[in-house]
Image (cartoon, rainbow, N blue to C red; front, side):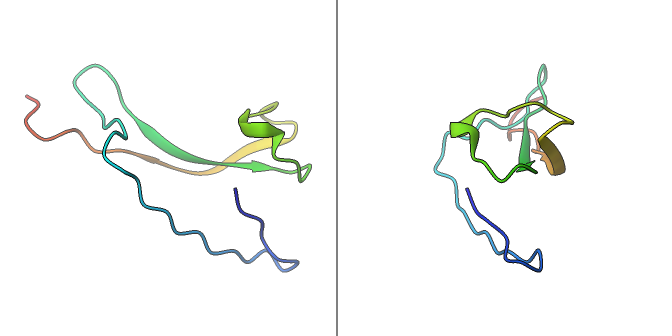
Length: 68
């Protein structure tokens, strides 16, 4: 979790340990940022999308190597 300053600026750097699932033949994995417009963390739950939870940024993760 991170919080932007009064002007909307924030920096976030995180590295993931092996185990983050990459995309494969049957699934596409994504990494998303969930913005809570009510300022609450919701204890790790996404909350109500479109009401107080919004996904302004997401990235589809590449396929794992060695998958045909």
